[in-house]
Length: 88
Image (cartoon, rainbow, N blue to C red):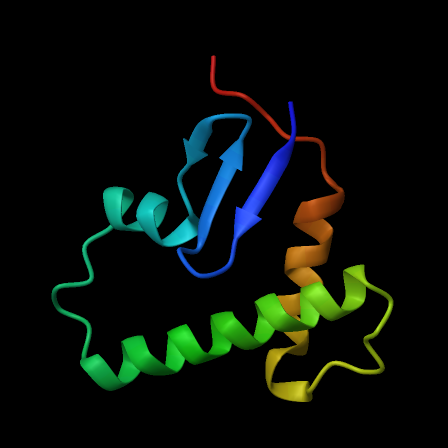
């Protein structure tokens, strides 16, 4: 099976199966109802920056990671190196 990503729809597929994206998973697990809009917007901006830095790293185009996202990026890279676990 092939993993694909469609940029315009931001849709991941494994073969013919649509996979949930991170936002859909976190929305199912958490409620952000009490979080101020500016805090959510800042978190979304930071998440996009970390995602972009990861993409640049994966394509060997990353020079350095900005200080404001370095900790998030490093933690994400550590998670990416760990084998996936499955709930039992």
